[in-house]
Image (cartoon, rainbow, N blue to C red):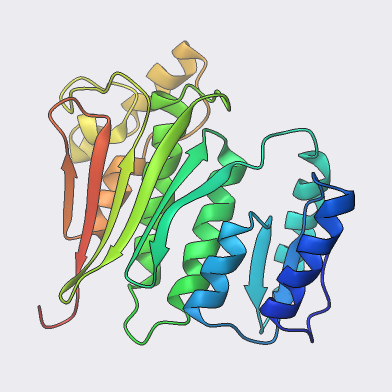
Length: 231
């Protein structure tokens, strides 16, 4: 179901509650003329498939609508653990579609904030989140990872914890960051040999965008930190 773009998020969520009494598994894309951080958090809590405020990108809405239809039998995917405008924590099934949905939510959420991270940080977040799904979660939707987005007085921070055994940064031959600048494509041969999807630039790309990319000792937890201008 796609809601009327002229109605508010509050009205749409009331409608979602009514519809789910009859169709608990219905997937809903909420479109609204505007929204506050609290409105968007409420939409995330109610596990709507997507929540977008004007102006809309018709191609994006169409793409997510198709995804919602095709994903009809999969888990809802994103569960709020706690949330306010400065700290949002969620648990998410390891699925690339959920990564797209969560990234779309954070992009929308940041548009409501007076201080917002640069758009490139969302690219870094999405790349590292996909790494957690592919390598930590092994693309298994029955496994979950945890994500937190935090805004401090001086920085924007993403935290991702995947269900994998971790890795050593010096032992990932399938990633471009393991090679010298003049040999960045060698990892492609490794990925082809292992039957992995095209990619391998995620850590390298993210490290060039954020100010700090910090992995835990085990390697299955990561912080992405971007300092605010002037900090």
